Every structure is written in C-alpha cells, then in structure tokens.
Length: 302
Ligand code: GRG
Image (cartoon, rainbow, N blue to C red; front, side, top):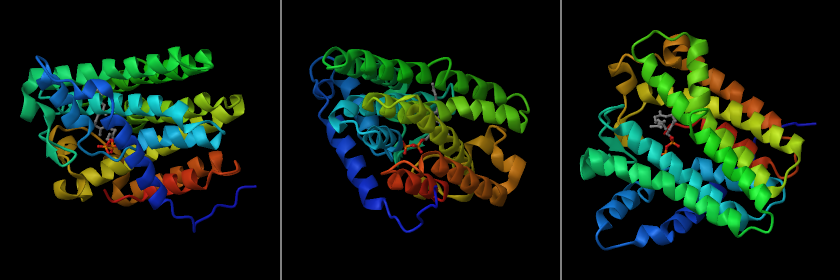
C-alpha cells in the first residue's frame, strides 16, 4: 500500500543526475567539430550546453534504475531525448512560431545565429539524437530492446507526439480551444516527451508490461501537471527568474489553463495530478525520488 513519504528530499540527487547528463552531452564527439561547419556546431553547443533543467533525461535514467537497468545503457537515450527537447525549443522560439528572444537565460538561437542558423542547429540536433540512439542499438547486447526504446522516443517526438501537439498549439492561436482541446494539445506537445522519457527508461531496463504501464501513468499525470505549472509561471513569474520570455501566450491570444481555472485552481490541479503520478509508482521499491520529483515539479516556482 502506498502511504507517501513527504520527508524525502531529492534535491541533491536531481542535481547530481543533471550534471551527469551535462558532462555526457558535452563529450558528444560531433559537438567538438571544427572546420568549415564550425558555426553549426557552435550553434548546437550554444543551445544544448547552455542550461536547462534536464528533467526529461533525469526521468529516463531514474525509470531505468527503478526497474533494475544499467545507467550506461540508458545514457545515450537520455542524451538523445535532451537533444530532441533542445531542438524543439530552438524551433519553437523562431519568428515563424513563438518569436521569443530569451531562452535558458540567454538570447535565443535565432537572435545569435540568425533564423537559418537556428533552424539548421535544431535540424542537426534532431538528427544527432537518432545517430546517438542508433549507435546504442547496434552496439547493444539486446538490440531489440534498445530499438524499442528508440522507436518509443521517435514516435513521441514526431507527428503522433510533440510535432502534432505543436501543430494543434499553433492552430489554437486563431481558435478558441475549450479545456479538453487544450488537454489534447498538451498531452502531445509536452506530455509525449515525458511519456518517452519514463517508458523508454523502463524499456531499456527490461521492465515488464505492468512496469511500462506504471511509467506511462506517471508520465501522463506529471507531464500535465508540468504544463499547467508552466502556464501559471507564464503569468506569475519573471523573465529573470525563468530565463525565458514570459507572457507570450497572453500576447498571442493563446488560451491556457489559467484562463479556465485561474492561478489557484491550476496550482491545486497540478498538486492533485502530482499525487496521481506518485501513486502510479509509489508501491515500487526505490520510487522515493520519483515521488519527490513529481511533487516538487508541481510546486516549482521556476
Ligand atoms: C517546434 C516541434 C516543435 C515543438 C515545440 C517544446 C515545445 C514544442 C514548445 C516550447 C514551449 C512550451 C511551453 C512547451 C511546453 C513544454 C515545456 C514546458 C517546455 C520547457 O521545458 P523545460 O521547462 O525547459 O523543461 P528547460 O529549458 O528547463 O529544458
């Protein structure tokens, strides 16, 4: 029976995991390239190594560990997921999308490298992610399992996942979505990569169907909570605190959860969802950190 443990503090573990991911990303061989296309690699490094909470790769590593997998097997998929996430942020900030000029505390990629440079940096990060995953597949002891993890991430990133969600999100600017349309949008735009993180980690570890289903349930609830809090912070926080442009949803006329439930209602819903996420994994031995993470992300102020 899951009773919950409100005393656990996972801050140090989150920090350690995030720095572990930073150092593996920084050592990716192609990021060190120089020569004729040095500027492209500079743009890739600028966005990939320039901050970010690293939540998705941390989730992937943690779900792998939860189900008894090896961190070294999960790291390529964790890095690939962060590369895909970073590409999506670069493209989302472009003038043809949200046209934002601040991300991760610095000018956005297109402000520094121009629109073409930013588009290409995003393209190269996306393709680099597949390169990293396929290398892991071909050198794995159990290539089928690793291929399944790669397929999960690829599907979540594409038309059936994040890119599809971004498409709905762009359409929502010129329509008046109701809350259920907003949920469908966010389940894809934001939720899909959380789903990929949690389930790919479980798959790499060789979790059984029940384990993968628990990971999916956790991802669904905490992904939605994460997006709701993101909407709240967009109206309650500051650019200095978040390191990214805020208020652009309001400026572009986009409806968010805050329009439907208000700030307090959103905070309450995020907490409720984080408890559902905690319950999804709370009976599994070693899940304290994941329970703590769901709660702490739902209460985050940046
Ligand atoms: C352009 C294909 C394409 C997709 C873009 C990621 C995305 C989809 C849009 C960014 C805008 C946004 C509010 C997305 C919701 C998901 C989200 C909250 C992203 C920010 O993730 P964090 O907070 O960012 O984990 P860091 O910088 O910490 O990695």
